[in-house]
Amino acid sequence: MTILIRTEADPKVGLGHLQRSLSLAAALRRCGIRPYFLVNDRSENLQRLKEFGLEGEAVQSDPSETAWTLEKARALGALGIGVDLSDLPAALLPALQEAGLWAMVRDDLGGRDFPCSLLVNGNADALALSYGNSNGRTRFLLGPKYGVLQTDFWKPQKRQVRTEVQNILIILGGADPFGLMPKLIHWIDRLDGTFSITVVLGPFFEGRAEIEREAARSHRSVRIMRNPPSLAPFFWEADLAISGAGQTLYELACTGCPTVAIQVSTNQAGQLRALEKTGVLWAAGHGAQTGLWERLQAKVPALLQDAGARRAMAEAGQALVDGQGAFRVAEVIATQVSS
Image (cartoon, rainbow, N blue to C red; front, side):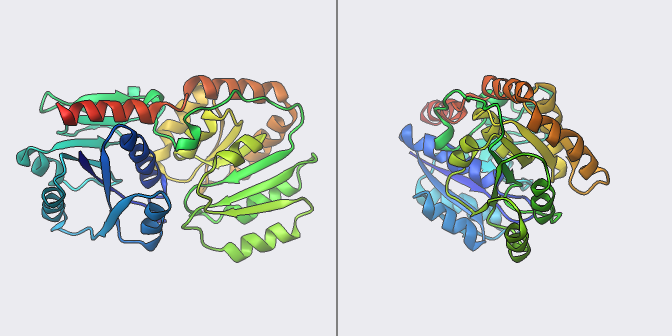
């Protein structure tokens, strides 16, 4: 059985749509389903498919995309299409429905109707969102139980929280739209404590020379990792993370890594509030707003010094995200497309 997966990644939308689609693909293959990717035309995306051993090709986003996608589905004998895009083409779902193809939508924001067979939103605020069901046949998989994580997070161990912080991780996502990384390295370097710093740069990062210069000036050991294939080793090693507020937050929660999160996109606000409410993290606000550094100053040193708070955060994260979401979603897909 073949399913097309239409998704994207670039400096504007980040890496989350593509990464969770890659992770779902790994679970689908275990269910006997062949995923074939259609991604926006960037060399980084095609390279990432290759690194994960997945098939796919680039597609141009234009008025002919829907017709082209349907033709590709017919050529491959695909039973359906999974869509994970920031801006879903209006004509796509009705066209799939008319063609008799199974369709899945991965959404983050709610507030509208998606005429599809399966709607997945694995975010922490998903159950509070409204969704229409105009065709009366849509099945909804909502909440962190259905969060799709990379394979390295599928069987997490229990976090052992150290009394003293030995390593701080800085990870902002696929890109750094507000140029925060050099400033964060400089600022964290001046905090009290005997810890090292790990910096993870996504595939769409700019200003790498400035980041490297700031790391070289640091009084601490600063390790820079550029677009690593897996983030899990760095999450387990870290005692505290400064993170962008995208899909990475769920992987940090799964590993029980205490986190202070910075919102870097408008669509992250809801899940950030929900995750803070459940005790999984502390939110520092939006990366473009004034007062960010004051909020970081109020939160990061406090978390550095309070092992009890870090332990409570780790327990809340691992209770909320168990790493099994990809299997749950893939099993539902396998059942639907084979029925």
